[in-house]
Amino acid sequence: MYPYKTALNIIKTFEGFSEKAYPDPGSGGEPYTIGHGTQFYPDGTAVKQGHMCTKKKALEYV
Image 1: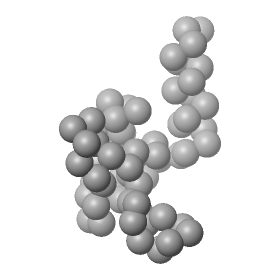
Image 2: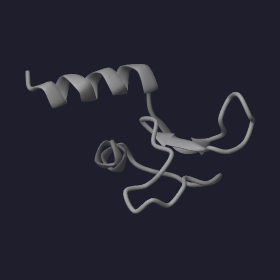
Image 3: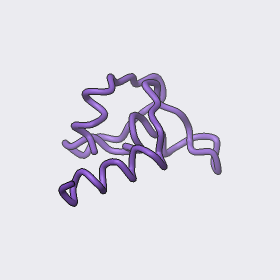
Image 4: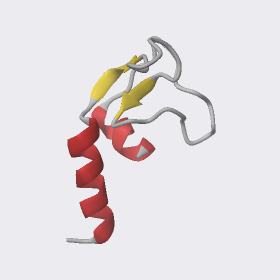
């Protein structure tokens, strides 16, 4: 197995998957997280309440 696949599997295992953005458990608000632990999209935009993503997109964000 390639190292990046191993790392991806670890991330997926520990982060799980959420298609709907959820608030930070500690603050009850920002930062919001989506997919497999994404808090910022590749363009630098923050994940916000109400955002959604597919499993395919979530893998692109990792």
